[in-house]
Length: 267
Image (cartoon, rainbow, N blue to C red; front, side, top):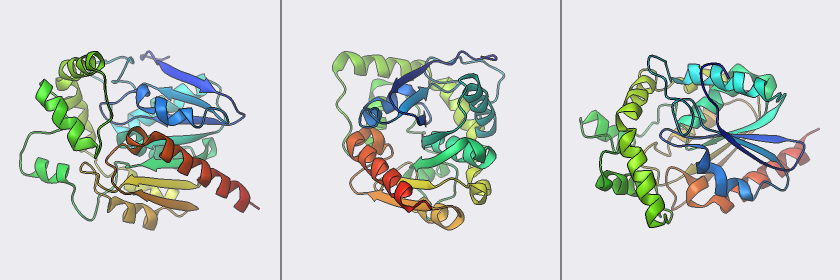
């Protein structure tokens, strides 16, 4: 579709669709354990964004939030989706939120999981490291870097079998320079989502791992204040930047309970 080859996972049963959007350096597989709890009730589509996973990495293209939202919109139209729930983590949260603000008629509900795109009142550990000119822990140049990334991202890193860990490590090392280029593009307008929060009309669930070292939990204060639609805030203790990986069933059950509450409170 267009210049990019969209690769995505699709499964589940149900009249309504959930579209999941992964974060920086991630891919569609970041959602596989989370969606198992949802697949009996929903159709789920998890794509690789352009520049990540099995999608194309085309030089001389912009991979900032606005361009990714427009590409995602074209992808959604190509699938014939008229309305859906959208769930995003980190960079994917910024994309999901900006999408909901730009195409409100498409979005049944919005879920932001440790989302990027707003200025946290308290700087995160990552922000402090970058401000001090230290190496970016999200970029992997060695086996040791990959281990540090896991420790930085999670309170309790998920178990990864040896051969699979080797594969993930080698892929991250191979993509290091490419990912650094995308990170630089995103950093040019790091608080883009914040500028459109008041345009979000969909019911919004904000989920946050309290011990996030990448995006500080105080970001939730900004989201709660500036999003004007019906919302719920869920802060999860002893979890890091990607709760849907660290505790997928718990996060999915929170999401289902929230959806039930929305249904019962609707006129």
